[in-house]
Length: 97
Image 1 (cartoon, rainbow, N blue to C red):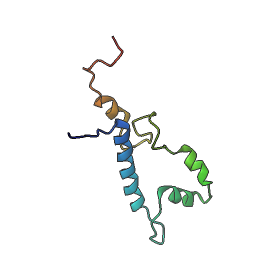
Image 2: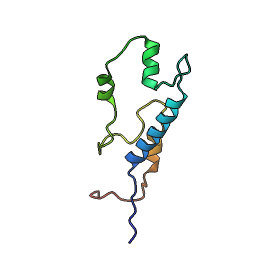
Image 3: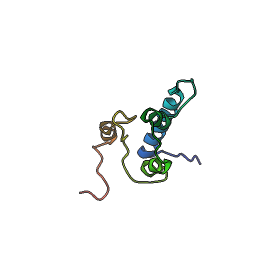
Image 4: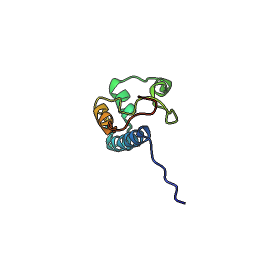
């Protein structure tokens, strides 16, 4: 018997965002050519340090089964309209009459 695993829409979006962030991280370099992640790059430009706990408090937790499936960033990987269009509106939802 074959077992298949279908990713949820949330898992698909999180995977795309993770890949996108990896690409951005590899592109950011400081003035010495040293690789920087986006947060460090922004902090360096601001000239001040923000405690890492503030960033962690706002980060998306991977294990959370609820929340938005679309990117929360202005130019995110997946827009809200793409998510809305991905639903098959010809199917009736369970419990809806």
